[in-house]
Image 1 (cartoon, rainbow, N blue to C red):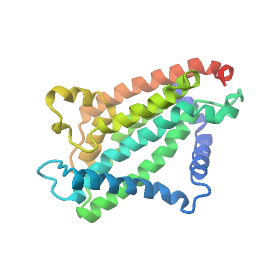
Image 2 (image 1 turned 45 degrees about the horizontal axis):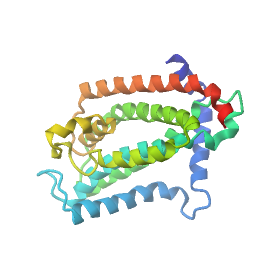
Image 3 (image 1 turned 180 degrees about the horizontal axis):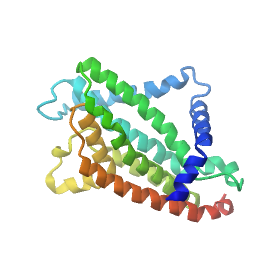
Length: 265
């Protein structure tokens, strides 16, 4: 763990520079530029809200009556899913997109995961601000419990960084992984409580939803942001511990196999 954290701390300035360069390159040449970080989640929100609340007449629970509040609930789940999906979809080819770095012996390859997740985190925070604005406009109030956001973000960050390390390293050896990850990430959208509450799932099948780490984080983000509830501290402690173990394993695995990257480029 010490080597993983020391690598992040020692290279934090490099990571921040690469994050800024990655965000600028992503929107270079487009007329609206960084505005797409705001427009993209808004477009997705409008489409999903129309499809699920108007076409399918979906309802969350008896307390949620308006389409505006339904949209906010949906958006809470969507921004967490989108942060994971953006990083996971890119992870299998992340190292292949940066072959020049692989050939540089002194370059810390593990920082590329932090760069990928850093860009996704910026988009998440922008979307979260939009969520708060929507909450203020549509509901007329903000809850003080949103100060617990770091407790929800911590296990999410550990999970996403660990996933990028694992998927990017395996993707160097198994090139078909990108196609498989794309299918799994799409399936995960519908197996996460984005468009429906967990209570809507028959009890016999809820265990499969709870095996999805994103599900608990989505529920907690809604609790602290929209409903003004204190987060489930024991649950967050448990999932943070599990995600920390996954993070450490993925970091160990990445450092173990990275010596062979140059041979398979």
